[in-house]
Image (tube, rainbow, N blue to C red; front, top):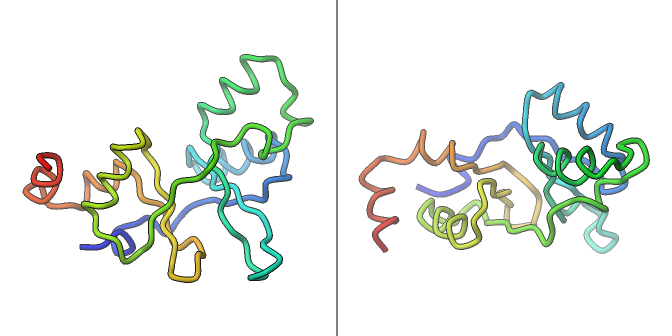
Length: 139
């Protein structure tokens, strides 16, 4: 089974120059807890993923520090560099990468580098057969 087959196709991505307040609103509307931050790539003329913002980032990097969500851009608080995986990679590779980097979300890219989905630990637990996940953990 590969990462692209089980990745959630419903995800939110916003430009790095969007203000945090807009990102929080997008999270609320989508009932999600993360946003993939993107920027325009002049060479490929497409949007490339460059970072990740989570609810926790907004709480710890904006609210707790009394920074204005209407003044701070996503690029100023995003987690970067962004760790990604290609859609053809195995779920074992995805799980290993998430474990190695202590992350719970992994954007999935097609061969052209375009985001096609978001893989989360929750998705892996729901969709990967138990025997397969246990063998990956043992390695």
